[in-house]
Length: 334
Image (cartoon, rainbow, N blue to C red; front, side, top):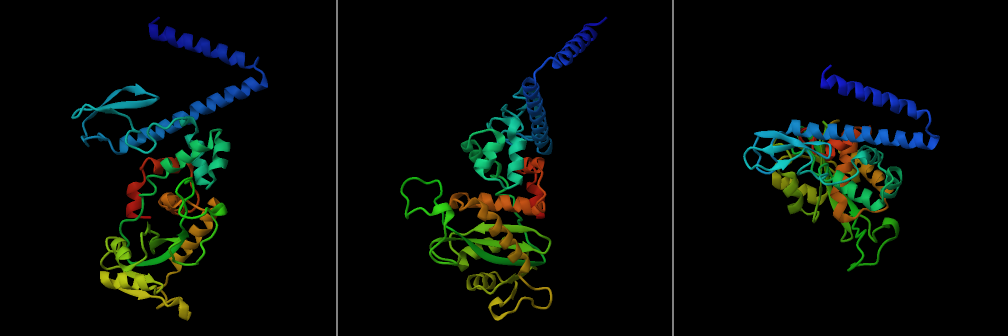
């Protein structure tokens, strides 16, 4: 009998002894054992998703060289070594999730993101401190923030919306008194208290949004010009800044005079698509009772991720997006 066969027999014997001992466990001990097995399964599932990333982009994260070799394992992940710069790395290196702990809870937290849960509710569900889930939120959303359409084709629509400027989380040097649970700006519409956001969509559902420094011709043109195909037709609601920017770009423009009761021109030119998206975004954002302006791009990316998947997000989809594994699909499609 070979050594390997003896090892297998020993493992089988130990496993049989373990299964027999389960019958003697108390209900509490069985629950603890089930939790332990669940953690192991979650870590294995997360590691499997992470390892798929290196298969998608098998290059060195430091020098971009594609000659890499396996170099042992650490923390359950395969390590690699670059033949060019000799740096060792794993599939998490260079991602926003690198060095985060509690991988056994990542899928559970990804489900919280899919459900649009608050920081505190997510912390309670995952059994961690709310500071941890706050940090996870913005690490998980760092790449979805960047995953937006780079080109709009055919009939496209653009509209401006705004969010109250928020210093949420800031404790010192506040330029004004804090608002209670988000509050409201003193003036409606675009003003010094509001942060302008430009939303653009085409009829294929490709979406891009931009937090603007100012809602004027120059800033709107700067983001629209590289976004729109030269043969695109852009529909807007006749806002002055949008009109001026589109005129400077020189593409075909179909302004919709909503204030005069016009909703559609020629049966195909309207802004109903982008307006509907804007309403969904605003309604969804209310649950957070005000969003810190510095994190607003992350929330816009979060909403695009949800909308791209028609609200049916799975934890694995959220984790793949957090690892940048959907960047190509997002920039060329939705």
